Length: 455
Image 1 (cartoon, one colour):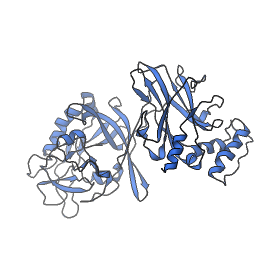
Image 2: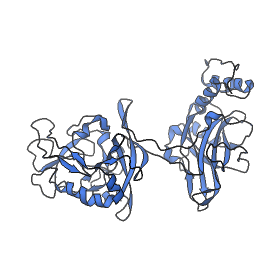
Image 3: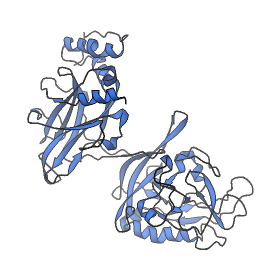
Image 4: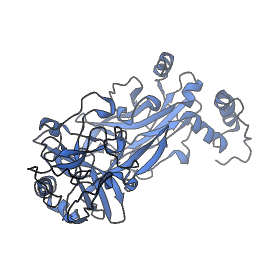
C-alpha cells in the first residue's frame, strides 16, 4: 500500500451514526454454525497450487512447554460420514525411529510402541480413546526407483505415521508425487512446537521464510532405497523424502489416526490451514452476541455494520462494544482485534447514539442491536474497490474481549448489488449510486432504471 493510501485510510476512520436507512433483509445474517469438515481442496494460484485442509481440535499434548497440555490441531486428510483421517498439524515430539540401528520394520520399531503407549495415554482421555479407531495399517513394500524395500507385516494401530506412498496421495492434499530429496514441497513441510524445540528437536531456523522452524519428521517405512537396513524413511525440512539413520534422537514425530466422526463430543471444528502455513481459526458464535451484517449507508456516505448483544455474556456484564474495521488487502484476519498493532486496523466503541430501537437479530430477542457507520474518506476508486474486513467486539467487566467472526466486503460490490437489485428506498437514492459511485469506478457502467423496484 502506498503512502498516500495509508493517509487516506487514516483520514477515513471517523464514525457517524444514522437511523433513517433501514438495513435490508439480505444484509442480516444469523448465527454461524461450525462447518462440517471436508476433504482437502487444491486450488491453482499463480504458477503453483495451494492446498487447504480443514482442521479439528482433538486431544491435548505439550506444545508451549513441558508442563501444560494444549489442544492438538489436526489436519483432515480425508473424511466420510463416520470417519476422519487426521494428521497432526505440527510435529508434536521428537525421538528415534528405533532405539538401535538393527534391521527392523514398522511392526517392531520402538517408535510404534511409543505412539501406541506413551503418546496415546498422555494425549487422550478415556472418552477420546474410545473415539480413536483401530486401523489396519498396510505396510506395502516400496522404493523410489530400484528394488522394492520390504516393509514387513501389516499392523493394527490406534496411532501411527504416514507412509511414503500416503505422502504422495493427492486425495490427502499431497498433490506432488513423493520424490527423493525434493527441495521444495510445501505440502509436506513440518514445523515443530516450542516444546519439541526445548526438548532438542531439530529446527531449520527462526527466520527463514517458509522454512522457519521446519524439521525432519519420520515416515512409516524402512528407507526409500534398497540395502539401507540401518535407515528409516522421512521428510526433510524442504518437504522432500530421504533416508535417515533410524537412531537419530532429534527427528520429529507427526502422528496420524482415524477418528470416529460421529462422536462429536470429543472433537471440535478448528478452522482451516493452507500449504503456505496460514491458519484461519474458526471463531464460534457466543450465546448472546452476534454480528448481523453490513450495508451501504448512502446518506452519510459510508459502510454501516450492525451487531446485537445482550447485557451479559458468559455470566459477566458487558461494559463496552463496538466494531473493528481493517483493509483486508494488507492484513490477515488475525490482525482484527482491539489494540491491533497494524496501521490498517481501527476499532471504534459504540456511543450512546448507537443502540437501535429495532432488534435486527433473528435469535437474540432480549438483545440490543447497534448500528455504526464508517464514513468514506474520499470515495476514491482505490477506496471503493479495496477489500475490507469488519467484525464486532464486546468488552466484559473483567476486561476480557469477545469477538464475532470476521466478515469481508468490497464497497463497489455492495453498491453494485444494491443498484442492480433496486434496493434503495427512493429513486433519487438509486440514481445517486450510479452517479456518485458506480461510474466513478466504471465509466461504462450501464444504467438500470428504477421502475418495478423490488424492495
